[in-house]
Structures are given as structure tokens and as C-alpha cells.
Amino acid sequence: MLSYLKAENLKCNRTFAKKLTVIAPVCMLLLAGISGKYFVQNGYNWWYTMILPSYITLLTALINQYEEKKLRYRAVFALPVDLKKVWVAKVAVIGIYVAIANIILLIGIIFGKLLYNTTSAITYYQAAAASMLLIITSLWQIPLCLFLSKKFGLLITILLNVGGGIILEIYAATKPAWFACPYSWATRLMCPVLGIQPNGLLVENGSELLKPAVIPIGILLSLALFAALLFVTANWFPKQEVK
Image (cartoon, rainbow, N blue to C red; front, side, top):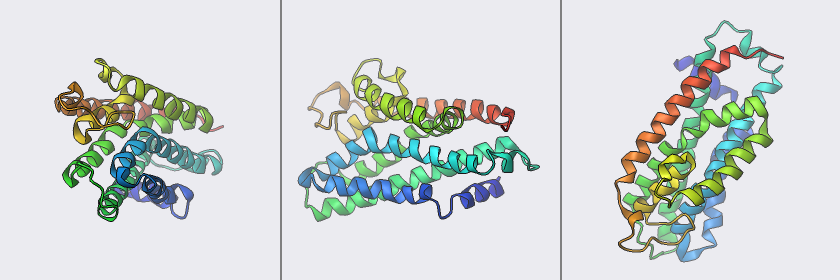
């Protein structure tokens, strides 16, 4: 499996997709810098409500396009390799890039908190926990977006995962049935972890949104959906015909 991971990572060398892993969090940090004392609060809120879903969508679409350009996947389907492992490795590599992007944002948030001397109540421990949870709760989007990109192309993937996702997460995150909408999981978990509402405002003391019981629920749901989507798409991929 390690050879598959190395191969998928090698395909991304010197591509914009790999550079995007640094560009996305850096642009987010620069944008949040305009907020001044709200640097930490807006840096995280804007990241998980808008930038992170957009980054995952564009990253998966670009990686799929690189494969499409190589004779529409003929270079892959013609090789004596396990196509399921190829798909899993592709998802894993993208997952690593997503984790790196979140870590870069975390480092930037820590330094920015010192630089701006912000009075934000969000501690370094909370920031680290938030980054870890954002990685976990966004994993399921990778096989989904990769599938959508392969099946329908970039435009449909953006409309569904970015456009639809932003609307659903903001609407559903504070509802009692938040757990029924995957796009709301990350945003909902940030309420007790960072004390930030989906709209960017701080959660009021005593609010139901601060209860940490939602955290294990969100983690389990995210991992379960990721495993299910990975299993389904990994079995779907080898059955595709090269056009």
C-alpha cells in the first residue's frame, strides 16, 4: 500500500493542487488578519464554513483532472495494479494534504494570536482540538468530491459540495437534528470547542450549543460516513470504463 501512496503523491508534485495545500490556509490567515482582535475567531469560522469545503472540492477536482488529462485514466486502468488500492491511496493522499492545510492554519492562528495581541478567549488547546476535529469531520467529503469530480465534473461538484454545503451547514448546525446533515457536523462541533456560532458570533453562556456531548457523536458519524463512502466508491472505481 505504501507504494500506491508514494505513486499518488508523486503525481501531485509540481502541481497547483499540492501548492493549494499551502495557499488556502495562508490566504485564510491573511484575510483573517484584517479582523484585528477578531483574528482567531474569524480565522477559524471563515475557514470551516467556507474555505475548507472549497479547498477540498477544488483539490479533489484538480487531482481528478490530472488523471483525466493522461488519456482519460488509460494510464491507470491499463496497469497491472489493484484499482481499489489506487482509489484508496488517492483518498489517503488528499486526506494528508487536508491535514497539512489544517496544521498550517493552526500554526498561523497561534502566531497571529501573539502578533495581534488578541483578547480572544480561545486557548491554544482549544485551537489544537478544533484543528484535529476539523480534519476528522471533513474526511468524508474527500471520497464524495472525488466521485463527483470523476462522474460529473468540476462545476457540479462545486455547486453540490460548496454551494449546497455552505447553505446546509449554516441552517442545520444549530437545529436539534443537526446530526442528520453531514455538512453541519464540523460547524456544530466548533460551538462547544471554540464557542463560536455558525454566523461567527460567540455562543452565549448557558446555551445548549456549548454542551460537549455532541463531540463524540460528530466524530463517530464522520468516521462512519467516511468509511461507508470510501468502501462504496472504492468498489465503484474499478468498474469504470475508460472512454
